[in-house]
Length: 321
Image (tube, rainbow, N blue to C red; front, side, top):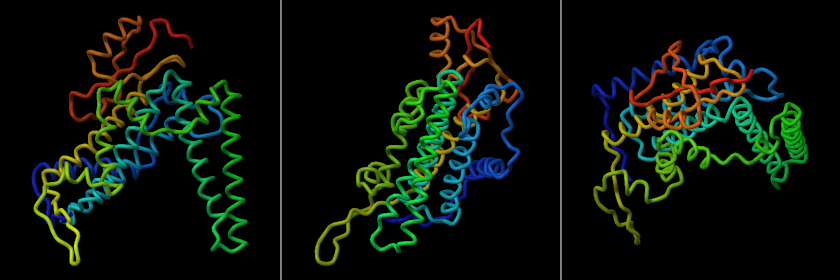
């Protein structure tokens, strides 16, 4: 594949850059994205067992999403439209934003808490696997192996303790300790939202994994090259228009998460309240069928792109608590 070396300057790119600068500044501000008193997410922090709450998990995922997209844009600003690097970074943005959406749209307070804790449990389990592998590396010294083994045991114990604490708090232990399947999480969001987090993530994953089908589908072919001694390579280029399209996928994913996060930070409701994210018509039909009242919140207008994206908070007509 060939890299398109060009400085990207156009109104669309400038608008994207201005938007990105704004969200990057928010990610660097520890006081950004506050939880309104008595909001859903503020309530989620009550009585949650030892471990990360939904708001903290979502803020972490949001900031990581922005950082991935910012790193990709820095390549474009330098005039290097990296044909693999940019899609790989956009992949991270889409995945993490979609995972944040999945956490926020858990069923009722318990569902949001369980999903947030599952993300935390998954982190501990991955740390355990990392240190366990290092404790068995043949090239490591005995001292380093012992240190890695101690860290592995510590993270394994922390994961077990998190599951126990969740059960004591009345949450489903298995929903916290189950393996986190990010593919299924993105597909769940898409099913409710009518979005395409999964398919775009899948395409970008093709680049990240070095698979030929993704660039053959998205990049523009320019010819072939026969290697010295044999072997034919297909050459393709990553044009500016295609690159901007991919950046806008990342922007849309972030705005979906920011809009949902804004609703959770501002909307009020009891422990039975669920954040619903789906197209308006579909949401209203399902809400009426279930006898659910829709409350439109305007305290923190969700900064959504495109404008057709919608998000609502729904709760039972007579919520308990």
